[in-house]
Image (tube, rainbow, N blue to C red; front, side):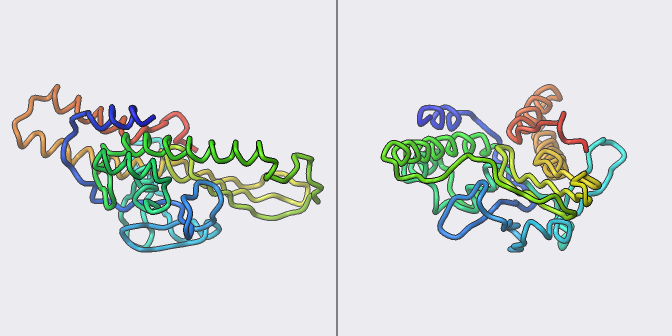
Length: 240
């Protein structure tokens, strides 16, 4: 994985900076991916509980897309949620080896070039392998307690919000159940759908810059395709 970070760092990418915000899960003294209920818009400095997601993220339709786009409700700005946002938010809590690899690749907060998301994803894999090694050592030593036995539960009406950092960014599941435990309302905000508005803004910025430099159309198209892949979209799951 260290070699993969170096490989991704070797790619030539345009020098651009997204003008949108960034969203990531945050937690004191930890690099969270599934253990916190707190999200933060880094540019706006807004933190909120996942249960209040509708108060801070606004989804809206546009004629040219089957996906609902997303923006920061308080500022109206599009935003990026991805490995790059997580590293910007929780840089200090990466493993030492991951932090060194990131710094060697020139990835340090605040990093706003969306092309650096490729490097950020590779750095996160270094961090994940470090964590996995630690978990394996704890399991081998018997230091980890717990059980996989089913937990008793009572069926009742209610609402629940699930919030996790998927590989592509923040993912929210908002479900409402009736007294029989049947789903009566479901809202899923995928990272890809949340990223579409900011991706389109970055595509426009990149296209205008390259066009201004006199680049031919096929070259501009290629660079835009690279940008789309840097966002790593899963467009087949962005429509709900």
